[in-house]
Image (cartoon, rainbow, N blue to C red; front, side, top):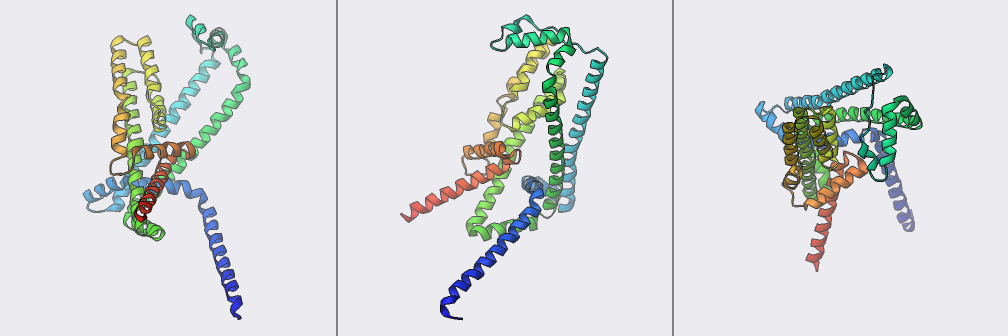
Length: 353
């Protein structure tokens, strides 16, 4: 072959190889795409629960498979049992409501007079409320154009919730498998990070692990603790639908809103419908819970990390708004890694000058 044609042939061979490699990687991505979310959730669960699972394994005589099986069963119980109970409760309440409506026993109390004094929407709400208290069928007839869209939305939401439950169960099983083989899985992840970034890759992998654990403790852990304590207060005070309100508060806490959105109206309802002692005690319980996340979150999220809390917080919230629940972790990890790379780049630039 002439010497002048060798660069062209070499470039052609490199192009063909890169194209074949890109095709193979893209094809693998298409095949694995339906499983990406459960795989990501499983990896996050494995990282977050590795410490407790390792402690349990040591207590069981260094049996990681048994420890991971116990963790999986506990997680499945924590997800499936409340889901089934909530579904049965909603179905029973819906059937009771429909039966009361069909039998003509469903009534709406008359609106208070001060409702009409509310700014902007007061008169409209008072008029509709008054119509519903006098003739419920006529009030529902005025809403008929909107009920079909609302029903379609509810059916879609129920379908998405069921799919999310199935995906989360699959994620728990994947996380259990990763926990049972934590040594090999961790070594493989570190080897991959090392191939990507050398010595710095190992540091970034450890930073990602610490970030996932920090977000788990600081966001999900605090949200779970706060919603459970708030739900306990609702249950002890006798507030109706305490279980459903507890689930609602868990979602509210995960999206970084306050439980006061539920607890304050519940306190007002108790002052109007319960004895004064119960209402006062519930209000004190609410006042104690409201600042709890502001105290615990900075302590738990930043533990073991040399990254500003604001970076983790913005990553978690931005990730949630962009990608849903899993974005709490993915967003925090990506933003922390980007921040760390940026800081390292600045340090190297300063050292070189």
